[in-house]
Image (cartoon, rainbow, N blue to C red; front, side):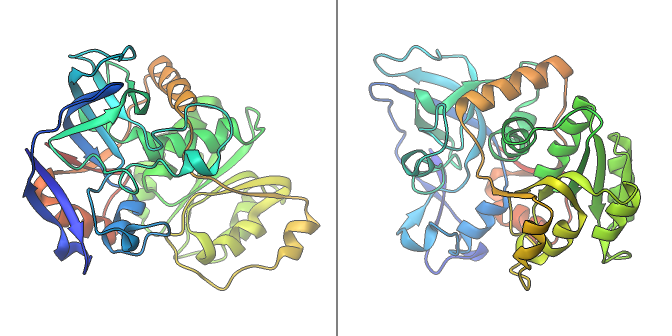
Length: 338
């Protein structure tokens, strides 16, 4: 089989396609022929050797946590799936249920566990799940990280009610899933972007209010203006230090800010006094459990939600796909197809 491999000196030019032996599933394991994988910002950091827990500490990595494939063979004792089943990988291979723990969070695909960027891969049966039949392979591959992160923030960690106001930052994978889920749940949605074209595409998905943050840098004030001065009930914070100050200005009293990314860079930080002053909740979020994933898939099937796949590349052209991600060219998700 062929597989992707990245090692020092790291970076996009270090991505290689190598030949490797076909793997064989052991007890409790499944052999999956991959059909598609999707890119997350985490993957870009890992390939660059700068991921927090990461790739800089490993001799080499097989990238990608998020994939769709067909089960080709199973080892002894496997009961969750059978040959011929179409499955999704799970971001955390050992987080089945309950709250996160250090052990569960140390079982992520890509690092420390070799990822889905290979033609054939062996996973624990606990680390794959069946998926809605109506979705394409490309769409399934977008679910494990971006979709589940958005799902958890909206429906597991927050206490939102229909009619509450949700702010989605940007038009990347997590935020577009957040928009689709929030719209289906009856929340009022506000989305930000530097591109009027992308904001127009968000309107086609049902967003209620749009803000071009390049034209309106103080978008926190714009959120308050759009909510009669009250602020947003929930903010999906993907920028990190570069955007958190505006989120603090935009959130209502006792509101919820879910921090899921750092794509805007470190920024200048924020004054915690404002967090105290309005009794808001600031929570870091790292994907979710298998139970959450399977509940999300049931909702996706019920509402027939179609993940937004914006760009598709052959899996051997991972460098080109990452270059598109770096340039912010995408709306929704970028996928590699086998």
